[in-house]
Image (cartoon, rainbow, N blue to C red; front, side):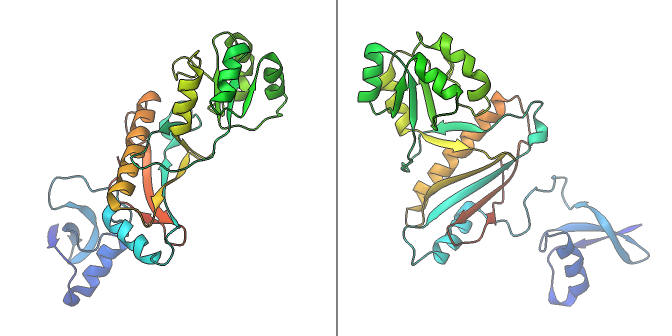
Length: 266
């Protein structure tokens, strides 16, 4: 068996170019196995490095953003989005993806905050901007599915009553806990933090779809928001005890632009 070293596809090597193109890696240095002069299966890279996982057509973040900005040049209010595909099979027990971050450049997000509180703390919650506030009666209403909300906080005094809602709020990532800081007497402080935080959620298939800016924003602000979100995804992976391969693919898109895969994923 002999080997042929192919560096880049040249016009005079059309057949070889097609062989490499079939693997989605035109222009990459490869060694192809050859039997009786016929190119066969891919043997490996010319170096010992492992082949990257990038999808065909993948770009760097900067290049992909430039394409989207050009596509949306006459649409200043159009949005830039990132879509993160996670590998639910890498988890022993798959859970809904739900977390919050403080972005480099804030994105306005309308959220309904529900607070379980009584007395002065309930008054404080309303004054701080919570839309739904109540005591034991609110626990019953939530149990009956009468309210839709995005964030949930509880005072320590109400928490024993709230625990009966764990089977309802837990799967939705809304159950207040001391670990998350959402069981507290500092109601106004937590509401302020929750209002400033940007929510990130995954769908039932473990794919996160989230806005990272507007097409007219500076690249550093859009990329800064993207990096913050990706770092938080790493934190989530650690919390779920996923050592590697949790994030499969990442795409960036805009309101009318194409979905572009990014070259390197964490």
